[in-house]
Length: 326
Image (cartoon, rainbow, N blue to C red; front, side, top):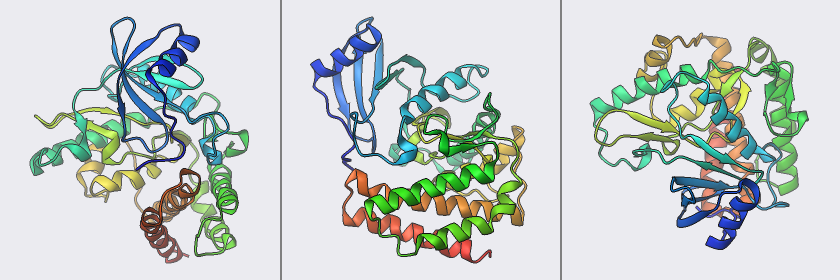
């Protein structure tokens, strides 16, 4: 999927960008087309190391409010992961970071969505349990400042409590929806009411934790030769919030119910998920938030009607789900 936010650079432009910001140039080997927001290139750095370079949209590009500065969020996450015990949360190493790019080490394996008929069903069971354990270790990371919300975006999208921060996150998307005239099919006031009605459930979350919020199979690398996760990528959507919100994107790759392999791995590694009415209500709100995000981003990214219709269907399902709880 091609996006209007992607910035296509020549080999000379990419080399100059790295050299100006980091004093280290590169040789372009390939442009990787999988990304939906940043441009991604496989390069060989001047010191001989292979690397993947992610380049932010050009200055002045139309982006959503939460997307302002999110490349800095991804760099922050890699620095946080590097502080954990080796292998706790496998991920690329942050090699170089500039204002407009980050350079990462190259992961072994392939993204899970491209693994074909590997892994086998038995491998998948093992991988989902491993993914649950990795996610639990990811959720041990807490912010130094104690605030909830987006780390690198405008200060209006963070707050000392989760209810306020999440409400602000939704409000920012509704502002973006108005700016891009997104076809939500529902008055914004109805969405505000649904979020407000879930306020008590949101208020039960009192400790912010790092939430990736984009752990679909395309962002999980696996070893096709055996059941092993080699790394998590694309941490740019991460926020400080409710660990349970992680289940929303994890559901794209398999079950997330209390008796699922993923939750078994999560709890065995020390993670805690108190399944019950409150968590169910919060999950419905997080599904609503992601559905809203996916519809609204179609505007600035220039996605076509088929893509928009797909995400509108998911958004409509999330509306039905949260309405059933109030």
